[in-house]
Length: 284
Figure 1 (cartoon, rainbow, N blue to C red):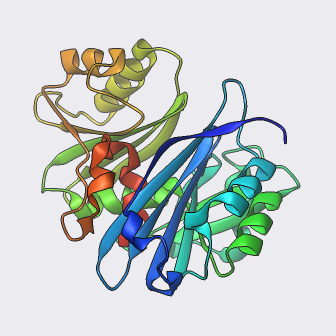
Figure 2 (cartoon, helix red, strand yellow):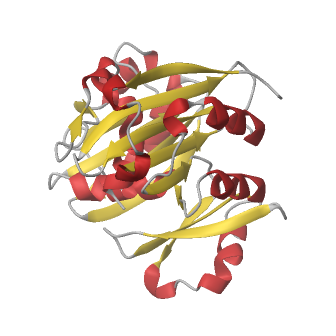
């Protein structure tokens, strides 16, 4: 084992522990510092639980850690009706669908990121926009996921964030910031139109506001009229939130979709933290 990993949130409807998993969809989300998963009862249209594991300081998530958790996590056992797995890495780029050629995947990505010979390339066809999201993950990861959960739909987190942003836009200019460890994803939509999608690394709150205001200036977005929607690892009492509030008039935390139900244990946390995880299945 190359490091340690601990549960930071693990809440499920215990009455479902012995359920046959053939009625469930499993959503997985893997990032550099851990992974989380959610179980959705397809017939009941209800999320019955969420689990999140996080690595110790200065440790990164690797396949051995993941495999050990899967082997010992009771909620990950069984034959699921369907499985999707989203990766939160930054090796991705968007290509307009009319220009997309499946044989050029590696070429597209090579223009924007450094690909390793061991990287495997994928693309997600977006439903809400005529765009292909091209991305790469280490082959060792894709091999492990498929071996543990056959027929998994492999996704990039940007695909889910873009789909959800367009699908849920309330006919206004919305800026979504999804926070990961030391990185945030930015998606800007106006009604059903995607204006921008990008990723930024940051170390301080000032880094976040600098990138945000720069992008808004380039797109000529008014801080008094645009709506900022936050998700992921950010809290209302954080330094980042307080600084954002000085510059942006309207700030909201991403709300869980109202089209499905949620077990009570899920509501015991800041649910915006798991926004793309919950949206993963609903946006397929």
